[in-house]
Image (cartoon, rainbow, N blue to C red):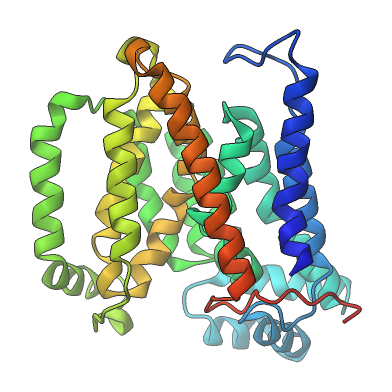
Length: 358
């Protein structure tokens, strides 16, 4: 388990060294000083992902078999097997023409999937240590060890977020359609554009809260109705235990609306807070179906940026509380991560870590 301890420990140690080196030039919201914390974290994560044994990650062996067999399949046959996600099928087939090396294929997907997230976090995070801790605990971090199709779609979701911010609707639609060719659940990204540009303030909560409550109360019939239009094979709901994440997201939403000084909130922070509310809506269905949790992965990636931004924009009377809350989250979520790394409690088989050398 040493690899997972170092994955988080090394960048956190880097953050401490950086902080000490900046005492004469304190890090502020307007600072342009390069903070290496996120770069170090994603570099270590990248190495762990490309140098792991194929048994680390529940679906990797299956992807390896798929990659080896694809050379004997025509495009027509591939499209027959993959009824929706043509993008991944074409990408795999074309890459197989270049090289038979599954390790290189895996490494390329890993790089393409991590790079947009790393750039987004490095550019947008106001407190990198908290961002990486939230990434490994709240965001769909384990998926990077198993779900190759969806992590590609999630990377495109980050690109879609940038396009939504820049009001590039046509390109936004194109990227979302492309993401759907890697994982059909990316259809939920279409909701990102209108929600991003809505200006939801505390006054809206009198409407938003009852709507979310109604959705949760009637989540089973609503979800069954929606899946008849999108994924008919998933229309049988079942309990999944996703209620804990729902409570956590609600707590984050309360924090995001109570803590900040509204005069310090820029448009992008408000937009990401809107997307947190949308994430809560999707999470209302997660307790009854794993598909809903997968649909929420695209929005959970935004939380590690949003929460530090909220903390750094606290009201004057909440400054000390904000500092304490950041420390509590850092310690609490780090302890949670290390506990799960130690116990190896996961369903995507990322624990224990086994390198390519055994």
